[in-house]
Length: 337
Ligand code: PEP
Ligand code: MN
Image (cartoon, rainbow, N blue to C red; front, side):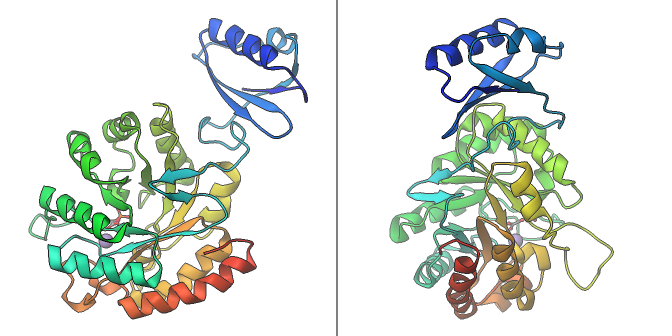
């Protein structure tokens, strides 16, 4: 349930209500709004006496939260959450664009890509060092060497780095080098991994599973949030449908729907969402118009030579043009780029 305090309720009243709820074995999450304080209550499985809470001084009313996700829900936290990442804020007025190759392929290649996306105006650098591939014979990523290259690229460009972590035991290593831990679509429901990145207290980019519902994604976010790590960004990256002309079907509905259900920032991945570079510009614009807080886009200096996902990677000049075009769309929906 959520406990809505009266307008002008005192700090002492909030503390008293919190203490009473904790005595009953529940955990509380306080959200101080401009007008009033909301106390989110995560129960312990046993029913809570609504009347007993409502009789406490300063309480206006209690409202049951019927959805299974609590900490991720906007009921618990009406204001947008802002995730701070080394000087970049995700979830505020300014849109954030993360760009770079699908995979870190080598030092020279990544440095070139990092410089080019920075010049085009990207705010963060993406690139996988651990790659989840359908075939065990495909390029699996450079591992720790790739992470070191990413950290060097951050030093050279100042761009914070987002990279995938595939297993709980990799979390300490990836955390040493990366600013944002990416949970890939294939791992959205890897609960041991979600616990591990929750404990790491590092920003997380949680990608939607290719066959997962919105509610399942929010439940996965809940795992991370349950560790007190509230630096979670949700990423719509397309789902599987019957349509073979594209790699996935980007669920544009997910953007306004997630913004309605949750306070967490929403990032869109038009590269995996389409699988075709020719569609990436249009879909990026649609995502911004739909209210996304940012984009994650694959950019490769030479897409035809890419070791993974070349078909959906933009050339730097196309990415640069897209960045120029996105500004006007951002402003049309009250955002800045
Ligand atoms: C990626 O970002 O390169 C990636 C593997 O994405 P996803 O997990 O969405 O397939
Ligand atoms: Mn990729």
